[in-house]
Structure formats: C-alpha cells, structure tokens
Length: 495
Image 1: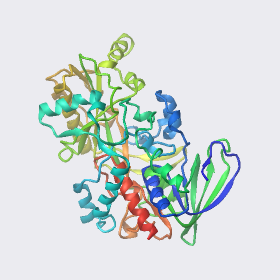
Image 2: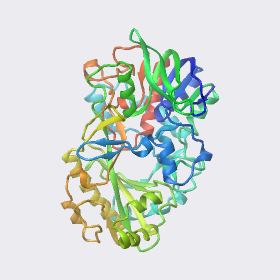
Image 3: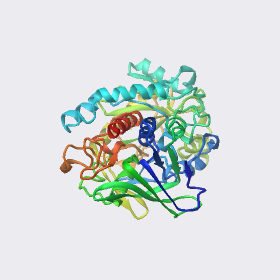
Image 4: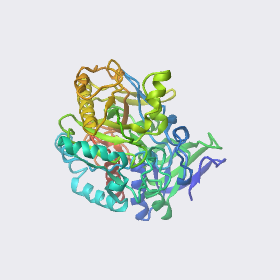
C-alpha cells in the first residue's frame, strides 16, 4: 500500500523483495519491470506526490512544489550555474519536455572500446528496451498541429540547409499548451507519474512519497534495506524498509553519490567524473506575433552541429515570468522590451561539454563543483552564433544574446559580433541539465563505483541504475537512455 509522507504522522517499518530509491526515469522503469515479474517492491521518493489535477500555469508554485530546492540548486565554479531537477513523484520527467533519444552509436562505441562496457550495456538489448518504451509511451515526432512557434525553426532550417526535425516526445494527445515545465495539466505528457508508476502500483508496488532515503542499511557488505525520514506532517519521523533481495538506487547523478556516501560506500571515484549538458537561450524578436506559449514546449531541434560543435539547438517555450525576467534594461526600457513578449522566440543551445566536476554532500544540500572548460565555451560561443543565424533566417529583426560584454541586441548582419563574446562562463546565463557519471560503471573497482552487474563494487544486493553509472555524457536528452538502461538493470537483477 502506498504512503503519502506529507500526511503520515507515525514511523513505519515494512519489508519487500526490492526497494527502489527514486521515482524518475530510472526508478519508475525498474519498478515497471520488477512489478511485471511479480516481485513485491517499494519506491521511495523524497518529493511530494502531486497529481495532474494540481498542476497550474504559475511558475513559482511549480518551482516550490515540483523542483529540488525550489529551483535554487546550483553548481559552483568559475560561475554559479543553476542545476534544475524535479523533486516529486515522477522526478524530473514531470517537469521536462518528454524528449526521447536513444544513445547515439557514436556515444556508445567509446563505452565499448575505451571503457569495456559492450557486454555490460549491450546495444541490442538496449534497443529492444527502447522499442518497448517508445511503444508504451507513444513516442513520436511532435505533430504539426502542435508545432505552434516551433515551425519557425523548421522554416529556418530549410532555408539554410541545416539538419533539423520535429522533436520526438512521449505524449498522448498533446494540446500544445506549452506547460511541460510546470507539469502537464492534461496528463498528455507521458511522465513517469502517469505511466510506469501507476502501472507498477496497480501490480502491487508501494509508492512512498515525501519519504527521504537517508542511508542504505548494509550488513556484512550486503544491502538489507533503507532507512529514512518523512518530509511532510510527520517531518523527521523515521522509517525503515527492509529489502529481502535488493536495493536499487535511481536517485540521479546528484543524489545517488550522496546517498551511497552516507551509507558507507567508499571509492575514490564516488561523486567524481560529474558531467552534464550546460547551455542557455538566445531570444529572437519578430515583427509578427510568435506567441511561443502556444504549441509544444519543445517541438523542433537541430542536430546539425552535434558532432562538429558537440551542440544541439532546440526550440523552447518559457513561462511568462521567465520571459519577463530576461527582458533587457530597466524602467521604460524594460517595459518596452517586456511589451514585446508575444513577438519573442527563445531557442536554446545544449552542449555536450568536456568538463568534469564533482558532487558531495554539503552543509545545505549538494555541494556541486563544475566549470565548463575553455574548449566548451568556444563550442558554445560558435553554437550561439549558429542560433542567431537560424533566428535571422526565420525572420527575426533582432536577437538578444544576453551575454555580458555584447550589445543588448544584434541586427541581421551583426552575427559576427558573437565571435568576440568572452569565453568566461560568468558572462552567460547558463543552466546545467542532464547529469551523469558520479558512480560510473567499470570492470574493475579501481576504475569506478559500480560493476557490470550494476552492483556497487564490494557489496551484494546494492545496485545503481541511473545515469550516475554512465561513463560519459550523451549530447542528447537522456530520459529514454536512462529508462532503457534501468530496464536492463532490473531484468539482470531478476535473473
């Protein structure tokens, strides 16, 4: 029976075959496989259970209810870079755009050749899992009737001969309301909240929300359960969930290494090799109305420079509060810029960065250290110029680069000014998403944290199933990749 930690007031103790920590792409996918096999299991989620009927269109309530640290989590380094993560039942799948990519062959091949993981993560098995996921979550290119302002990128790409396509997403009947980032109010986006979690729950899985896992209980190196605390009305009340067969950790590349460290796992690689996809937006101003909030939140992307610049350019619809916060100037200048909100298109660069950082537990949450390398910033700067060129090809009369040291606006023909943009990350309004590598898989304990059987080196029945184990970042949105790997892990654990 599921438990809502926001309303529970008393401690509890239970026993299951398996305990899964984390309810996002990894945890929910593993739960779906385990439940199908008839195993008893509990899924522990630190965040609250927020149902579809509760999703609104205001940014602040969504940040405070659905995001970790109310959207305030950040990586420290040369610049402070926000690290956005969902913290609710369904994890980040509730607040992302449901974009689905398989692991590209050119990304997987080094995993086989350089890291020796070809047998641990066999591509044929992963493709079989992705086939299943795409069928069950109705993954398909965004339908043209839901393009809205996204069609501007389609027109620009055709004009410039750039490789681009409608974004592949998991949805059933998207209405183009542009509200993916605050939770789909129609239940059309196939987040884990409305897909694999209820599937598992109907088959007996217990979904425990507002229940923070504090540590995995290890006896003689064997995982036997999880201890934690409730986060709601019974805040601080302890709970213990026993695991007869195994504990599966799918808490993200930020939370997983912290939980393992609190549980006594020791490895020089734990919390290291942290990678992600830094990136940020560029705004185009059009004479004709654009109304970016009508249409799929992210409906078109250009992968033309995925290998050359390690960058992907995506359309994105931002909530009005974020659009207004990014309007340049102050006073009358700001009011004038804000009045053009309906004429704006925001396109974003997602960078497959070389940089590696670290994650450990700090005094007030995760201590994330990360600084993009100079070669990352060079690629980012070039990708921003390509973004400006696309926006101008789509008909923008000006672009707002939002880069310190450059003019507030650039006109057609002024794209070369972007070549002079500083390489200092502090000059840019970047965010860091899609996180990897902090408990990476390796054949030998000397090279990583997790073995090819998904078990933490030196332990029994303690498994890691999320993108913490990925040896590198992907350069594409990772939800489908994570789900496929988690399914592979769950099936292997059941064998």
